Length: 118
Image (tube, rainbow, N blue to C red; front, side):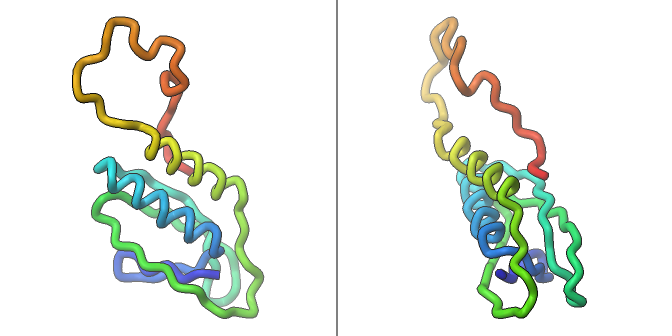
């Protein structure tokens, strides 16, 4: 498990989730963009809940590993979506000049959508 220090508070979540969040936040910051993320967290009493984070250029995240007897939180689908979004942000490059007419027709990026990751 990892503790995420965020906006003056802290959240306990799975290590793979925390790693994916930090990578996604860095990719967003490099594009001067932000996104909302809904993640599973572990409460102080051991219960599971959800937290909604806004990450972007102003995000100040710190994660640290935590030893706990509680079961690791795992959300493989969320981690996959975060990794895919991080890769997509890393692959997009700013254009220096205007595109030629018809540029991007049939391009893989034509169908990209950027909804909040949940």
